[in-house]
Image (cartoon, rainbow, N blue to C red; front, side, top):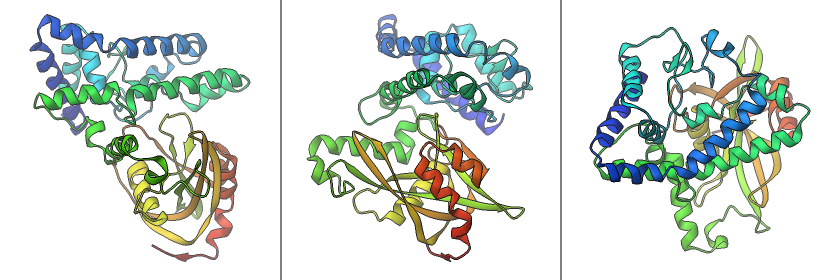
Length: 357
């Protein structure tokens, strides 16, 4: 059994044993907590079936690629497994356990069968992944439809992003209180997500201006720092882009400059947490770009990082994908045009810089 399969199997076994020990009323109460989430998932499924049903087909399965992200195994939250077990029959759960124990099924993803996904309710990351080809085909001339999809991606955070009480965090907490643990409990294990929860708790206790020294000049301007990470492949510069937390866009590793942290410390930390890379920062910074968010504006100082190490696993690998791409393509694929302009300056910048941190 591979390490991925074992991790998945152990989490499934934990959930199955816990649920089997619940009384009828206890299980019904737990299922009732899923109502809002299930309505959201049904709405998403309806949207995807209506607008992507003719685009996203069995071709993904026949090509032996995962229909979501073409990784060796899909990314699952622990709560995904809890929800799936609560909704599945014992036979369906046994089938999942069987494929995990027996290993390679010839597909890119262990959970793919001849008729598609073996889960009763697909993991949220997989269910809401759209490949570039599908997005371009459906959204290219339909900006209103793209905005509708972006709204769904924001709604997803109401269940998964712990800057407030959310279902996925609550489900993990139930099992932790019962004495169980799992590497898939990202909302309690991921340093980045734990920090989000800590920040949210502090926001309830302290005035915004005292809490957020990264609000600069104006109260609705947020100071961030990020890195354009690069490498050389056959003398060609490649830039590392990552998906945003929603999975809809490509960007660079970046984040808010938290209390007590410098811009350089922030960049190194975000590069590790969001992209799983380590490296040397070059001096001076490449520039800045700005974009609107949180009913205000983010002001991002952008550094350049020469990547020296790329990790196989990192804190946010459950929700972010990495993509190495050449400079011109990277500049046109990021969401913000100002960031794209900075990326285009990279080749000239590298001709006369010095190594920093």
